[in-house]
Image (tube, rainbow, N blue to C red; front, side, top):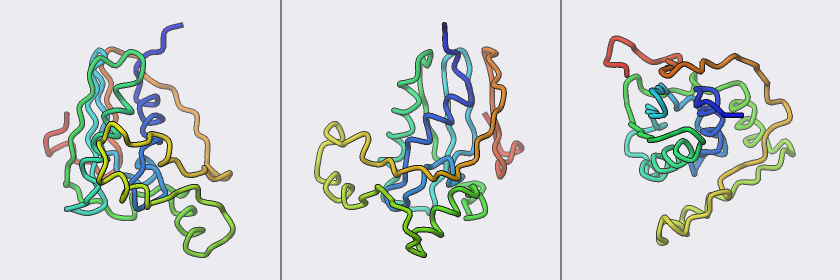
Length: 168
């Protein structure tokens, strides 16, 4: 059984990427603005929570690596965009719940250690752990089933993107 490269598969892989200061994946944070697929070539446009984010390079590499390892992907390209600017309104309800629970100390365990990034700053990126960034998922995570396109070219424009400003 051949697994086609689909937007859904890419978005699921990107759920393994985390901003080192926020224990929520970049998909639920609303950082992914566009995913384009053309015969195995994938381009992801994403933003960061703030300009000058010190995790810029780390997140870019995480995104590229997560996409590149998917079967059927022949190349992965990432682009950080600033328009439209990210706001907390872009976060999913699961992300809001997780951050609220963290603030309130509600007993939900967060398997997240931001200090790992301090140690990683002085190490070669090839020595960085790949699984340390994954917090425990909330049991209330909504599940949505959607049908993915398996055409040779597919694109997904997420809310907040502006097709008039040079989409892929």
